[in-house]
Length: 119
Length: 111
Image (tube, rainbow over the protein chains, first blue to last red):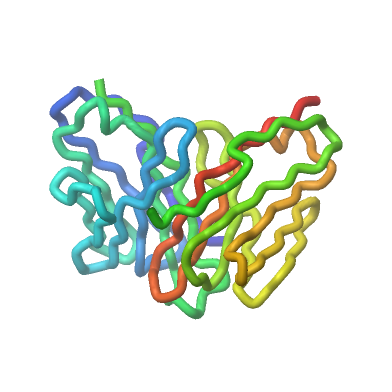
């Protein structure tokens, strides 16, 4: 079945530094990838949608200059948290969609998540 | 907010009992999905129900969908301690390319 690999699974960084999280589709081509953030005991909040070769679409309230998303190929999307601060500490999860909308029975595959701690 | 609402927020039951979680959403959908998440871990896809379906079964899981009320329910029968987790509904809305999650239900099953 479709597998999405996300790494690192955990990262601790100092305040002010940048952190890159990678999301790879291992056995399929992902035309669209999604990035979610989850605070403790809360639900997943969609941050942005990225399509290969084009700019990401950010949800309202998400700073595009702070959360840089690059979807350079059909198998790789990256999220870079720039100038990280303690309030950016969260669980980040990516998801990849393989089939065009309207044709997929179940097109979403999730990575295992990255726990970011900014100290 | 696009986010769906789930209730209850938390549910504690004994092993062997049934657990029912409800989800309400706001927009027209292609399908609705249920996921499970163990604490601090990734998501596990449980079941998908399409907008033209009313009920679906998978093992001990039963999902219903009422598009007129924009609501869904997840029933776990004969619960086990290993079912302890958070459960989320997620809607795949029409005319969008996103999966939006509900607020989640934290289920605790006591042995």
